[in-house]
Image 1 (cartoon, one colour):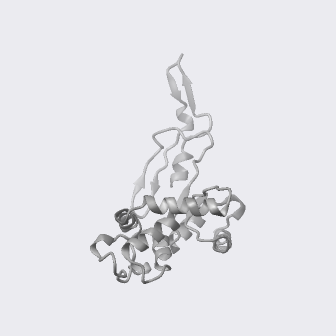
Image 2: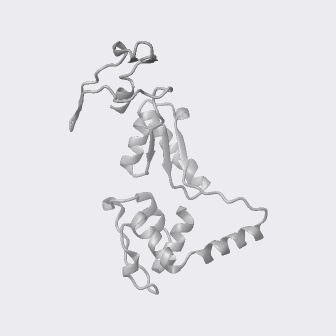
Length: 203
């Protein structure tokens, strides 16, 4: 529907003619009259479409529904990837999904949530990591992953005891990829420990 809304304005519809006071050529702006299962939209779009026609459609999340949505409609797909090998496998999976929707994988981009830090040596890398760890207090390590990633308050649990079982992915109403990554950590991690591990992987 959103692509139909953008297409409700033809190229050249906007005139900006000060002399005549004409903003747009009404013959090039069309009603949409979209009727779906849950809502209807008459259109046209209430602003002119961008010069390139359609803005880039980005989908974030790698649940089954998210991957299917991305393969069907989006131009770009944002995901968490733990390694190059995992990224290559994910790319191949998405290529298959794209082809099943009749789309060319060459026109689809995957963007991984990676924050690169460039250093000159392993020693400098270790020093940078040590400094980062010093900047994060136990409370910060608890707070950061609690609601954004786990949808649970980690401060409710003893800081020196392993966490109770995390939510099941199938029923989790949150960022399932983040939950999956955290579930892969050592089950004996404490709440500050899982916070530090999560932030190290997900930032």
